[in-house]
Image 1 (cartoon, rainbow, N blue to C red):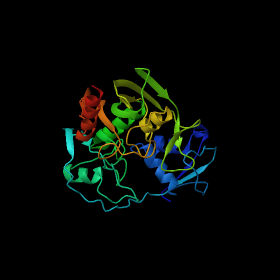
Image 2 (cartoon, rainbow, N blue to C red):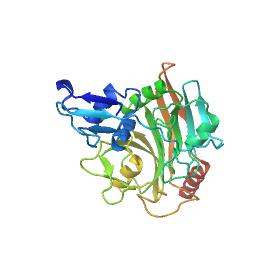
Image 3 (cartoon, rainbow, N blue to C red):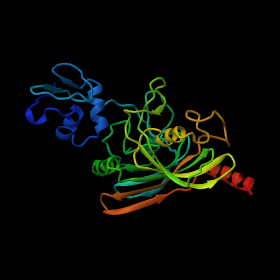
Image 4 (cartoon, rainbow, N blue to C red):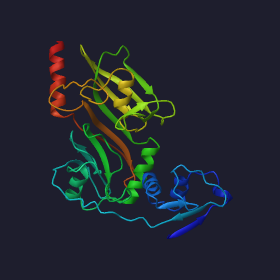
Length: 304
């Protein structure tokens, strides 16, 4: 073991992951610390414990040096659509169908592979498999996300994300008609108890809040803007299904119906954040994909 720590009275009652991030992994994300605990690099009194383990007086924490496992990530020319770039960060318009970062179960080129080809420096906070990745959007959701080039920028952006200071606005085509013009869905989200690929609304889940406004109404569908106050996995898709207006083309939470050529009609069209180095608020927008436009134009012409 590379380091042993005895818990004193001041740290009694803290979560293990919180304690480690605040005192020993200040440069790393909470997910990095939780990964270290889950992989057995952290022991409490000689045994492996959960990330939320509550510390007790005289607990002995043993930290082992975390091995950096190479995933043999290759740089791939994906011709990423870079909306903005400076010395600290960049904003990418991700196409529909592209996964953000590699995983053990996914072996096709991801956004990260494209970043490695186009960008010389990326932050290391989220480890070798997620260089630069501050937040994600789903594979079949298109649109904007911000990428950090260095750890200082990454930390600042991650902090603002956790404090809900980064504003993200999506445009979504959903099933059904809305009587209201705007509203807020405030419903906690957690992993589905039977299908681990899905999320669901359930008491005891993590707080989740989505604000929506109606842009246009059609016979069978409604076009919305959705603004995230929190950023849970599949949040807009889960919340829309929860109020019986699933996103069109969403095979997991909506009808298994193909509308148009491909994918779900959900696009991250706007992102606003405070630049940690330039000390100014920045806002970027990206138009919806052409396929999305074509469907909207057809719905508009049909309703005339």
